[in-house]
Amino acid sequence: MEFDYLAIWNNRSLLAEGLATTLFISVVAIPLSILFGALIALMRVSGNMFLRTFATAYVEVIRNTPFLIQIFMVFYALPFIGIRLSGLPTGVLCLAIYGAAYYSEIFRGGIESVPKGQFDACKALGLSYWFYMRRIIVPQLYKYVIPPGTNIALIMIKESSLLSMITVAELTYVAHDINGRTFSPVESFTAIALLYWLVSALFLVFADWLKARTGREDGDELFIVR
Image 1 (cartoon, rainbow, N blue to C red):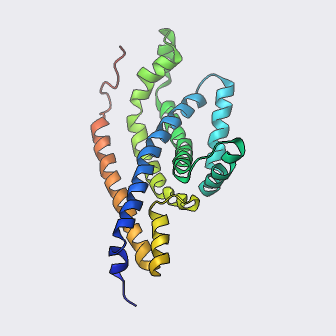
Image 2 (image 1 turned 45 degrees about the vertical axis):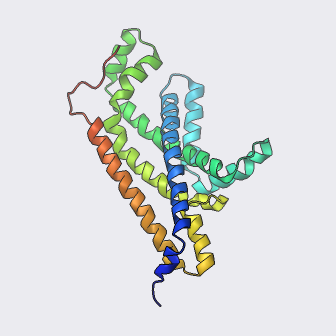
Image 3 (image 1 turned 30 degrees about the horizontal axis):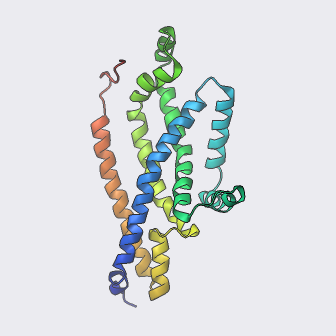
């Protein structure tokens, strides 16, 4: 049995379309999950019991149920309440919700790593909660958030493969399509494995650049209140 390179080459346009879809999903879902995660983290550390309870329940449900089940629940449950979305927006939404639960824990850990004296000083100065969180606490979180946040982003890129189950034409869906046309599963899935590796490797390069750009030495000024 020989490796059939033509099975990949003859379907290169399909692979390119699948790669473009995977990249689009990742580029949209990851920033959304970071934004949602930051909001959930602020809710978890707020003084409002209702917000804390809601945020805690959200994180526990998302982290303790399989992502595939979450996809099916959203994809099949939304029409029951009159919301009909195609596979792609549903997939982006599900991935963003999934990643937000993990990012919220990263942000919460970073917030709790800030010395308590800074919170006391902000309150003593009469600064509002949202002001000092936005202008003083959050800008210090880069060194805490970027390393673990990079791992979550990589997981999200790879978990996007499960969106093929709701007919999102990303890389894994395309591999199944090519396999159905050519009966060459080894070639099809080897090709997308290499593409996933390439995307992840390039993302790590970007993350290293971002970490170097936003990194601060201990003792450097991390924020300026204006």
